[in-house]
Length: 256
Length: 256
DNA sequence: CTCGTTTCTTGTCGTATTGACTTTTTTACA
DNA sequence: TGTAAAAAAGTCAATACGACAAGAAACGAG
Image 1 (tube, rainbow over the protein chains, first blue to last red):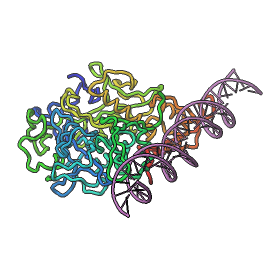
Image 2 (image 1 turned 90 degrees about the horizontal axis):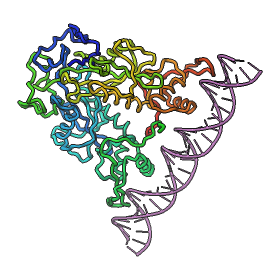
Image 3 (image 1 turned 45 degrees about the vertical axis):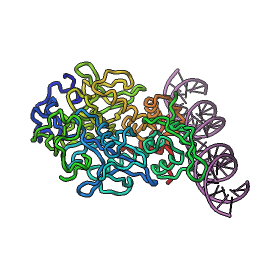
Image 4 (image 1 turned 180 degrees about the vertical axis):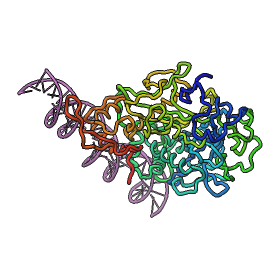
C-alpha cells in the first residue's frame, strides 16, 4: 500500500512521533492488535457505535424511542459497529431489534466524536435518523416512546443528537419525503396534515395543505378512498417513491 | 461505569460472544491496548481520520483543494484524529496546514465508514466542508486547486465525499451564509453574484440578485464603496455574521 | 325521506414573491 | 464633451402563498 493521502500526502517518510495531539502522552498500541493495522503508531478509538433516533408522530406530538439506563437516564438505541460492517447496517439492525421493522426511512445524521462523550473511552458514534409508523410498539420492554421536545435527562451526548435529528426533520419536511416512514402505504391528506402539523408545530389549512403537498410531486393518488365514520370519504394517496426523494420545493430556481 | 445504553440497554449480562457481525472471525484485542478501554471484546477501528473538502470559487468555477498521491490519483487533505481530539479540530488543523488560514467556515459533512473504504484497514473518516477565499494559495507543494465538477481519479471514497460537499453547498447557498469563507470581509454585490453563479451553475440577473440577497438579511452595507476601473462605484457589503447563520429563506412559513 | 352535521374537496381572492426587463445614476476614458 | 461601462433603482407580468368561502359526499337523528 503506497497511497497515504489521508495523512496529508506529505509523509512518505513517516515521522518517528506522529504529529497528532495526544499521541505523545499515550503509548501507541503494540503490534498484533487491531490498531496495528494502522501503518504507524496513530491512536485508534476503542470502538465505533451507531445510534438511532427513532421518531414517530402520535397524539399530535413528535415522539422518540428511548431506553432507560441503569441510573435512570434515557438513551437512544444503538450498538457497536462490527468489523466489516457499515454503520448504516448497524443502525438498521438496532432499529429492527427495537421495533421489529425493516426497510424504513433511515438516514445518517452525522458523526459525534467529541472527546469524553462516552465515559467508557474513545468511542465515536455515527448518529442516524429513522421514522416509523405511529402504531409501532417497541419490541424491547426497556424501550418507550417519550415526547421528543420535552425535557429529559439524556445519557451521553444524546440530547445533542436528538436536537440534530429534530432540526433535520423540520428542515426537510416540505422538501423531501421524510414522512414516508411515519405514514402508511396509503394515507389520506388529513393523515399527512396531522404529521406535518406536529413536526412543524403549526396548524395548516386543510385546503391549502392539500394544494401545496400535491404541488411537491411527492405524492400521487391511489384512486381508492376511505370512509371513516362521519363525513365525506377521503381520497387516498401514496408517496411516489418510498426511497429518499426530493420534492419540487422552491429553493432559488436554477436555470435549466 | 454502569450505563451501557449504547449497546442497546439490554446487555447488563454481556454475552460471551458479542452480537456483532464480524466479531467472531476477528480476534478481540488483548488488554493493555487502546481497544481494551472497551468494556468487552468489541472490535475497534484501526484509526479515525478527518478529511476536509476545501472549496473556493475561481474563474467562475468551483474548485477543490486536492493532493496528488504516489500512484497519480487525487485525494482530499486529511489526517488522523488524535486521542482526546475532536475531529473538527483535526480538520481545522489540516486546513491551516494546507492553506495557512484559520477561523474559516468549517462544517461537518458526515461520517464515511463503509467497510473497505480505506485499504489500510478499518479507518472511518469524518468528512468536513470548508470554504476559503479565492486568492488562497496552497501551502503544500503537493496540493493544487482542481475543478470540483470535472472528472478526476479520486483515491478512497473521496469522490463520494466531494459529491456530498457540493450538494451541501448548493443546497445551503440561499439559506445560509456558507459563502462567508469565499468572500472577503467587504465585498460588492457583483463579487457575491459571481460566487453564487458558479455554485448554482446559473447566471443571476444583477438587479434581482441584489434585491434577493439583501432580502435574506444575511448581509449589511458597510457604507463604503469601491471604484474599480470604469463604471459606477459599487456599494460594499459584509456578512452580518461570520458565524454559520441562516437567512430569511422561505421554506414553508411557520406560524409564530 | 329529509335535514343537519361532519369531513373532505374545490374554488376564489388579495397580497407577496419571483424573474426578466428597462431606466437612471455615476464613473472612467477617449 | 461625448461615449461606454458598471451599478443601482424602478417596472411589470406571472406565479406562489395564506386565508377564506363554497361545494360534494357521507352519516345519523327525527
